[in-house]
Amino acid sequence: MPAPITRTGTPPAPADQLAAWHSPAAAVTRDRVIVLTDADVAEVLAARDAVRRASLPLLGVRRADFPLPALGARLARLAEELEGGHGHAVVRGIPLQLLSEADERLVLWGLGRHVGIAVSQDPLGRLIRPADTSRTDFHSGGSDVTALLVRDEGRTISLTGAGRVVDEIVLSRPELAMRLFDAFHHDRGGEEEPREKPYRSVPLACRHDGRLSLRYDRRAIESGQRFSLVPRLAGADVALLDLIDETAAAPAWRHDLHLQAGDLLLINNYEVLHRHGGSRGAAVPEPLRLWITLRHGRLLPTSFTWPTPAYGETGGRGGIAPRDVVDRTHGRTAHPDIRR
Image (cartoon, rainbow, N blue to C red; front, side, top):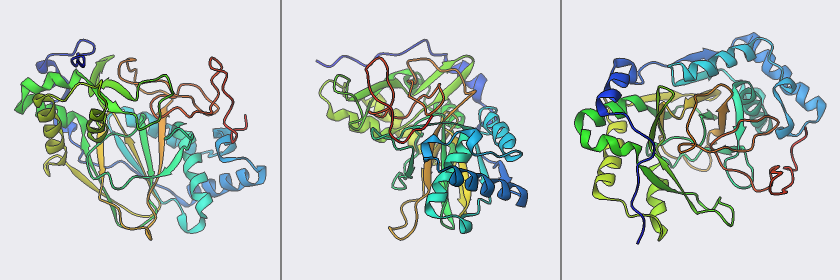
């Protein structure tokens, strides 16, 4: 018989959650927008040209290789703000009209290096991928921050504050609130190593170092039910997932963010859930996506996240460990595109 789902850690009482989260600031209602100046754009283009002259492979480009003398400091402060209460931000005015498709990837990578550390999005080690805009359900991304570079006009991405979701669960269904801290089993989609489980067991929420964090991916939870060793979802578990979906999508708490080509959206995945407005067809370029670990991100317990190899730095977490990245304990080799 499958083992029952067990609670991980010592969750706070619902009253403690209310004290920590119930406030108007818990809702996503205002955007933090940085509009690039002409001087900022000149820095971005000069950094692109410097990388091209040095003939560096994309994954070998470090912060120092993509110099942004003034903008880099602002991006570093923005990374701190993502953990300090904003939860999301938009960098507006990336000059896509002056960039090739390869340049778009390079600029996203270079800006991302100034925000944090990129982690892989699949077992092949791909760090930049088109966003899955079929995800019209509210969910969290794979690491601390999801970065989305919009490449078409009029794209809508909806956001909901994780704190507001927790608030509403505590207020409307307090008997379900504690289940946020139970371990749910997520399908790993074939990215596991041969001796690893094909699912990962983590709670939806954790309270650690005085902060509440929420990670949510219902699609992975439901897909995990295909494994015989995974416990069946109880009725209360399904009720909790339904309530998260309902709350996140409610017009009162949902913030529909209308983006344009050249916008870079940054989302703190522990503070904000997001969903796409849907695919717009093969002829329309999807946003490019990067998963980023913040260099000074919040402390999280091992029951809630996992370490991931990083490129040229240490401290990656979340995401998917590539099968060909350096792992000295297992004798694997380095990713062929990395130049130290």
